[in-house]
Structure formats: structure tokens, C-alpha cells
Image 1: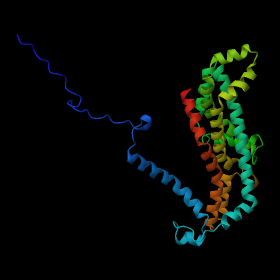
Image 2 (image 1 turned 45 degrees about the vertical axis):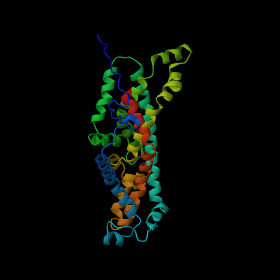
Image 3 (image 1 turned 90 degrees about the horizontal axis):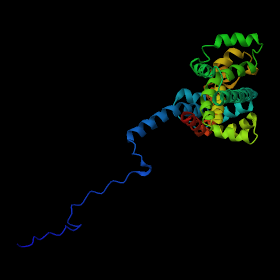
Image 4 (image 1 turned 60 degrees about the horizontal axis):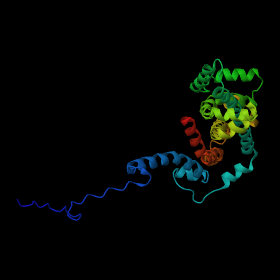
Length: 299
């Protein structure tokens, strides 16, 4: 019988060529739809347009604003801003807002950190109820309690005083602070605390040397939120402060706009100067806020 011949395997060049695999995009992420970018740019422009209009409007004259409300300054007038910066009213209101914001921030961070440390690191009766109480505080804005707050502040003799604004702001800033800081403090390993105790570190020493540095992102986040919230507060100072010398910047803008209602360009300049500090502060620490909130969610 004749031997069967086996055909040699086909050469690589004879095999059907396979389609080259597509290289994944860098970072393993798919390219976003251009429509998403278009919508994002549109939303950004919608948010920035009023801010740009107010700032640019401060460089115009009243005649230019009346003739062409959406036009550009021709020429640019800096007199409106210079007149406001030379006066004492603006800087006094900046000082009042700074005192209220800094004191509120210190009080919120200090008290919130102590409460969060007790809730996160120790077991005691009523722990869950206490945490639920702070969580429930997020559902009650300051506008709901403005009348009881007014009566309480008046009974304490703090009307027309910055302290009458600071104390309620600290109280209403604690719920958000506790909710953010508890996950940070709870994520610290118990073994770390046991090792510190073996080395002779007291509870207070462990708090200052270990807890505070490890929870610094959350502390910075709640501090920034408390500062911005106090700086932009309007309703509470409106009820508590009736003296022009004690006005904060939000009240000062309202009073300035009422007093110089005819001088639109000057009102726009004052409004621009009043909102720039908070805008710059938030822009500088935006990543800190996002990072702190992300850490709170992970914890």
C-alpha cells in the first residue's frame, strides 16, 4: 500500500491574517462623547457669565450700562473700584466677616473633632442615638429655626454683636462636620492606638500625635466648608445685626445697593469686591474639599 503523504502545514504567510487588536486608550478610559464636553462647556459658561458681567460692569459708567447693558467698557474705568477700596466701609465689613468666619471655623473644627473622636473611637451607651442626632441635624436648615434663634440671641444680650452670629453658625456647622470626620477617625486602626498605649502615650497624646495628623484631610475640608458658609451667610446676620458698624459683607452689599441704587456701576464694583475673597478661597482649596469628601465616603 502506498504511504499516505501528509501535506505540510501552511506557512504563516498562507494563514488568513487576523485583524490587529485595537490599542486601548491611555489610562484604560474610553474617549468621552464630544456632546458631553459641549454640555459641560455650556454649563460652565452659564455659571461664569453672571460673575463676569458683574466684574466687568464695575469698570463701566452708568451711561454705558444704560446705553448697552451687555457691552464692554470703553474705556475701562477703575475709579469705581478705587473709590470703594479707599473708603472705610468696605474694609470694616471685611474685618467683621473675617472675624465671624475664622472664629466659626475654629469652633466648628475643634468641637466637631472632639465629638467625632468620641463617637468613632469609643463605645458608650447612646452612641448610635448621638450620631443619629447629628445626622438628623442636616435636615434642619437655619431658616427653620431663625425665629427661636433670634429670641435666644436677644435673651443672651448678643444683638448687634458678632458673637450672636458666631454661636448659631457653630451649632449648625457641627452636623456636617461630624458626618465627615467620623469615617476618617473610624478608619484609624485600633492596633495603632494599642501600640501607642504600650509605648506610654496617653489618650490625649494619641489624639494630638496620631489622630489629628491622620485625619488632616477631613479637618481641612470641614474647615473650608465652615469658613465659606460663614463668609456667605446672609439670613442670620440680617436678623441679628442692625447696626451698620457690625455689618458683614453680605449685609454690606445689600445696604450699599439700597443706598446707591442709582449708581449701578458702583454697586457692581462693590459686589465684585465682596464676592472675590470667597471665590478665590474656594478656588484655591477646591481639591482639598473633593479629597476630603472622597476620603469620608471611602471610610
